[in-house]
Image 1 (cartoon, rainbow, N blue to C red):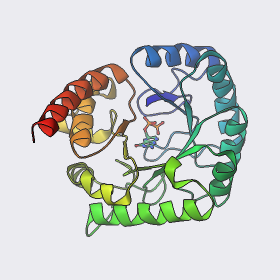
Image 2: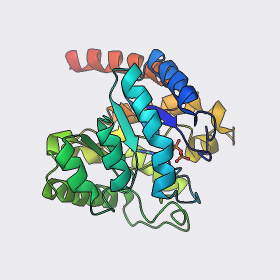
Image 3: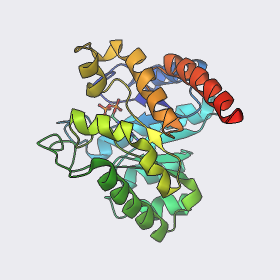
Image 4: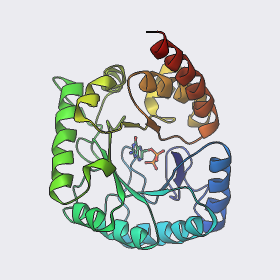
Length: 264
Ligand code: HH2
């Protein structure tokens, strides 16, 4: 899943691809580099980010979704917490809603259900403005799994087809560096929920911290390594800024896994 942020303030690529023409060029590059799905976001959810009003998010996202649906065949995901934005994006042909708040907007479930779109349910404690203020867990993997299970039930209750749901542990969303590492190490514990796991670790602070503080643009090799670690624990969708290195790393890891499975 290639990340296409059309925001002025995203932590790694804010402001670079906001105009629809530039977004389309970037989308073509992402597909060329191996993205199977594109995730368009019109609101930064980095720690401390200012929430975007719906009108602003709509003005950023809709022209881009329209342009992508006109020029590309890959499925388009829209990263939004607002049912109003989701509905308008689905009307423009978006295929998937990526909700980092896992249905906090009560209208989100029914909107997705009605459209038959796919739904990503991501785990987050608190909200982006406050989530990194001393997050606490007794058992981070167990609590994330239980809260995602509740979100899956809520989505099913709203009428979303369970087969169209994907879960995501929400790396960096209300979690310390230790929580994030432990979640990655125990990602296989999400398998009990029976849904594909999406991993969004691309260029995040945890990668920078593990690499001695390198800036976001220098974190793509570390990102690929984290994706391989996730793949070996069951993750199957990888949300990344630069698909090339992760695609290569996963191709090698998948080939080795297949041989070891066949010879087991
Ligand atoms: N992370 C971000 C945004 N959306 N969606 C899912 N499903 N999983 C994630 O881990 C995830 C996400 C944050 O990263 P990014 O889009 O690069 O930055 P920003 O929020 O500053 O736009």
